[in-house]
Amino acid sequence: MSDSVKYLLDEEHMPKSWYNLVADLPSPPPAVLHPGTGQPVGPDDLAPLFPMALIGQEVTQEREVEIPEPVQDVYRQWRPAPLFRARKLEKALDTPARIYYKYEGVSPTGSHKPNTAVPQAFYNQQEGVKRLTTETGAGQWGSSIAYAGQYFGLEVDVYMVKVSYQQKPYRRALMQTFGARCVPSPSTETNAGRAILAQHPDSTGSLGIAISEAVEMAAQRDDTKYALGSVLNHVLLHQTIIGQEAMMQMEMANDDPDIVIGCAGGGSNLAGLAFPYIGRNLREGKKTRIVAVEPASCPTLTRGRYAYDFGDTASLTPLVKMYTLGSAFVPSPIHAGGLRYHGMAPLVSHAKALGLLEARAVAQTECFKAGVLFAKAEGVVPAPESTHAVKAAIDEALKCKESGESKAILFNLSGHGYFDMQAYTDFFDGKLVDEPYDEAMLAKALDGLPDVAAE
Image (cartoon, rainbow, N blue to C red; front, top):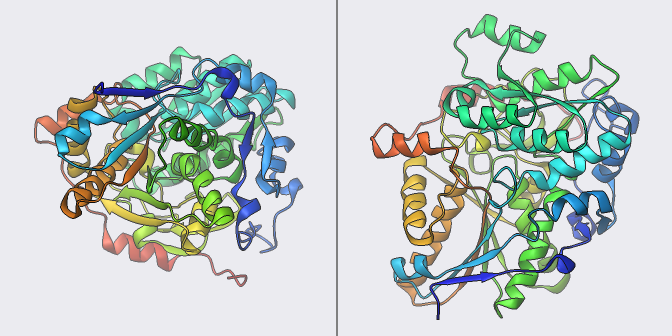
């Protein structure tokens, strides 16, 4: 058999609806709370930030949400995305495991992020919005919303975490190529940014800070809305096209995963692949293991507290119950910028609290070792974020080698690393180190969590 095995769906088999895990959960997720009143937020509270269509998707109980035809039309540029059997990696590891990866790097911006950027831009355009503000860590989301924004005729302002702005100039250039304005965060453009710089002039930034800046700017103009690339229910909903396609492709392979793996920062690519499998576990009683992999320097699921917290540093957002390190926590400047977030998607957090998935934390040098091994075997250089999933898949395959079991392992290769080669250069030059998080900062951030009676 060929060393390269690829499973492709034709356009007719691209899913026509997104899957909503809420419909199958044994208990509803905790309510989103207004920070002033402590009461559940309503549509009017969210209307300054999001179009009503997305607010509706945020709270829907329906199992399926139809994908609008204009969105499907854009999706067809790269979807359905391929599924690969990693036979060369299996051979390199000498494992009886069967390793599969869903490859989202074929999108125009090289990651899974356009799966939600496109519908978000579409729904905003339909409501008459002219401008979007957003944040980005590694730049995958920023470049994706820039791409989607130009497609639907929207101006886009991106507040990029400063350390990533400096580490990843090509991501910045990609955003600018698609017509977006890219600003290093914290910046002097907002009250939130100026406040951080007054206290910490050399701040490397965080997603929480960048979110504060984007939200503040969106609230100032009636023609402007805010777009978020992860965390919220509607974002995770849009990503489930990944797992739905993967299920059909695994059937083509005449196989079914025992283990499903995704890297986890805000939770969108993990949810995209895993939520359809969690739903199947709940409906059919299957036992597919779901594994979330996060950076050891920002261990939200493994060291965070399940509590109500703000999604941003300046406390401008509603309160959501999630695994959190505290909104004041600033992660170490690892290269996996997309995973440097203090919280985790509320739906992913709820699933973890219900025991529907497990989590582990891994150090960045071990992840890059795994990424290099994968690249040598499979010919694809993973994004720094995706190396976390690669590392966990390799670990599980080696466990199969020790036990002699032949398990099927499926992971989401959420993006390629061709704009992230400085990270690999640093790795080969010995400059990449495992960045420990500040225990004192974590303790202080957790002590500062909001006091919410509803907990």
